[in-house]
Length: 221
Ligand code: ATP
View 1 (cartoon, protein in one colour):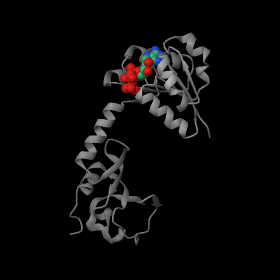
View 2 (cartoon, helix red, strand yellow):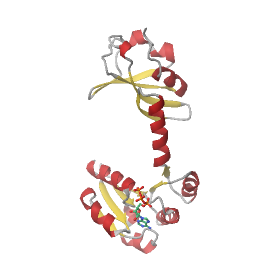
View 3 (cartoon, rainbow, N blue to C red):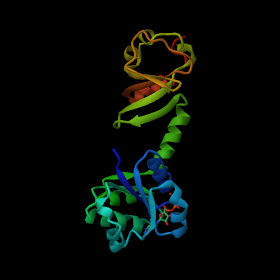
View 4 (cartoon, helix red, strand yellow):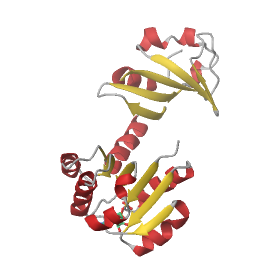
């Protein structure tokens, strides 16, 4: 199904988001008040146009309320970002996602009606720290404060062992939901599945248990 998106603010963040959605076959309208940014965006979006998103008339003239999801990717001009979100919600846009540059900005964006606020710099900082602290963790999704799903590279000494032998449930209180081997993914692997070097386990559990497992290289010694 094709969803229509508008990305307001075609900086590095906005443009990379827009081009990824466009590549995935979605309909993407790119909006920026800077003519050069709009010119540069043309190859990466369905349509790109110049408009000031703090101008309600300009937003109306591009029929913004008919777009499924609008992403406000303006960062530095906090006032413009807040005003844009406010106008979009007043004009009846169903889903508005906005980028915040700090915590207070994020709180205000929620107050004026944003449906989802993202903090790209903060989240990327957390992600990089996580990766440095646990190099075996390739990716993770936080499900709540205490629980996550993580992709964890198996330690070398686990190769040739079966899931049953490794027994993550008893040892670490973790459930294996999939095994990634090169480009293949095996969902619901059998307990007799044996591990190859370089396999990645997709594991769900409590953060402290995940951390214990991700940092145990001597597990099977
Ligand atoms: P990034 O960090 O994503 O590269 P940036 O540092 O270039 O962003 P931002 O201030 O976050 O700068 O602005 C992103 C884009 O939003 C810029 O291209 C800017 O022209 C555009 N922009 C800012 N205010 C408005 C506005 N009121 N209407 C439309 N576009 C705007």
